[in-house]
Image 1 (cartoon, rainbow, N blue to C red):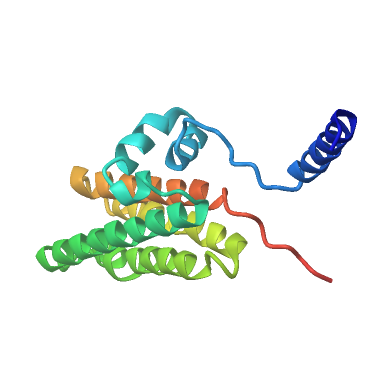
Image 2 (cartoon, rainbow, N blue to C red):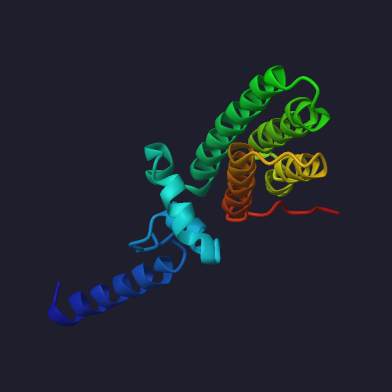
Length: 185
């Protein structure tokens, strides 16, 4: 092969590589981890989000948005179930409080159910998972209102409601990063 033929061959080969390079998935070089981008979306609560999620190595090491969402929702189910159990225990100590009973048997039941529904819909219906993650926060908000209506001042219950509501926000922000379902006609 003479020199000009070799150069022509190399030039053609380079053009082929360049034309195909636009079709290949390019890994995004980023120093931020997925959970950090979710926390960035939390705005003024970004540090609170980081502190919460960094307690879970499976969340901080997630390499795909789907895996991240799965772990965030598993954590949300665990924490809201613990919250529900705490209200059940409190209800047994204060059986006359309708608000505490409502929190234990209705509001937190719905919160746990919404987180479980979100987890089950991650792949098949990411928009529905996003919605379920968001409405999971209604339970603690409604519980807080019920406690306020009965003039129950209990810092540990208020703190629990605040925490679970915040976890709902984080789960919603995480599921916002999932690809949206394509609507077909």
